[in-house]
Length: 244
Image 1 (cartoon, rainbow, N blue to C red):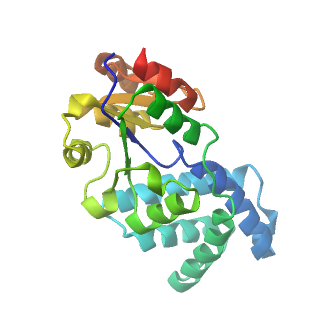
Image 2 (cartoon, helix red, strand yellow; image 1 turned 90 degrees about the vertical axis):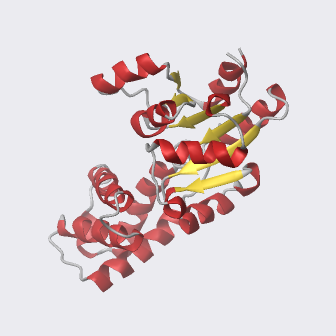
């Protein structure tokens, strides 16, 4: 394939190890708050917290809840699984305390920075950008904490743009900022439908980072084949894939 002019990345669970931080954070939080939460199952509690994030964060992306509201709903539904009721104010406070535990576990995936360096060496003049579904302040804080801020020429957040992946407009907007045709850009993300297929539908080359070697839904598998989605299980595989 022709080497891309621009490589765009997703943030959470592509570069930034969000799920690992959330799982560690919720267990630390339950230990800190104690009480009924101290009985939390070390496997079931992170799984429930992850499921509630999927549910309520997508409500935020769809405009049903605001950013603070999705956090509040996650805390209230999680507490309800322990037969506890949190008022809105209590849920906000509960989430704020959890967030401090979550922040202590923030890190990049080990293959993130080496991937940037290898791409820059193999593709002289390549440019980097980021497209993330999220609040610009929150995502920006994560990037600063893990040392990603200076890696990107442009950062596009759904919260600032008002359009979320997999909507083609967010990918095309990114390419317009770089002033490059969509077919000269690559987008890499950990979600097949939201990231790789969304990018491909917009005209970019979509790359699915499938770290867990998950099996996609049949309908997604068929579309991925039709759209020529590239697949990798580590960012180590990206530089040689884009330059072969």
